[in-house]
Image (cartoon, one colour):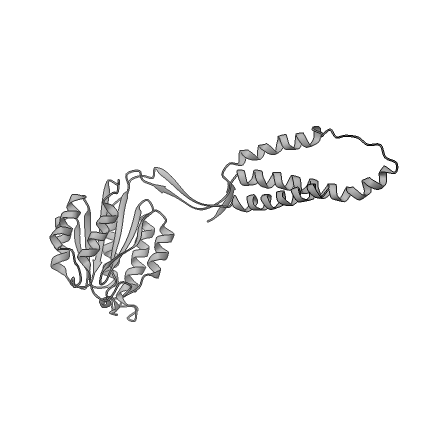
Amino acid sequence: MYSFSFEYPYLFLLLIPFILCFIYCKAKESSYFMPHLNLLNQSTKKSTILINLLKYLTVILAITALASPIKIKNAQFINSDGIDIVLNLDTSDSMKQRGFNKFDLQQNRFDVVKELASDFIDKRTNDNIALVVFGNSALIASTLSFDKNAQKEILNYLDIGIVGPRTALIDSLASSVKILKNSKALSKIIILLSDGEDTSSQIPFNIALKLLKKYNIKVYTIAIQSQNRYVLNKIAKETNGKYFNANSKEDLQNVYKQINELEKSKLKKNKVVLKEYYYFYPLFIATIILILLIYLRNKE
């Protein structure tokens, strides 16, 4: 839910001296005695009202800009010792196969994966999450972020074949390491999901394993319908992770549930607030009014 407020509301107190000065501070000007002065007053009365109105609007809008109007989009509580997670997903052509969901036989594998991965993201409220997909090569779809809505939106735009029809599984691990290697989190994990053999990687398997161990990254591997069992099992074993096999949507749902339970975050500690700033709107209007005010003053 969005809420509107001011980041520095106390700055509106500046209106008090402005109002007091308006009441008590009168400018001293030269006096001229003229006959029929009432005619001159009538001709300038409208102009004076307009100028005063513009002057007050300029000050009010400038102070409003200083108070920094904001819209709070989202507030999340983040662990200081939380978990950084990379969801590493196969987008090769084989993910087009249907029948993985027995309740909707027309739904392909990747659509099921997106649905369940999105649910998993929702459950990891205190964790930093990134997205990597792989086909002919690996693509970092999103770096680590606490913004779960943004991550789910990115996930929704991903599709089969986005980086080619083949399977660069090992290369995707290297890309995931690139995201996590500078992480300060106490726990760094990759959840690697694939339904086929590696057919496109350029990085050797043993190099990828060394990188994972060097940066203390744990890998949970998920094989869709028993493909690539040996490699995925070895990756999980060598990194102190766990290997899973999923033959249906229900299996995959259970896998994500198990991983969610295995990797528990600690209690909420730090609050992260996502904001949109709007100070430039009143500032822009105040600037335009000030220019108009200067023009009218000079015209007089």
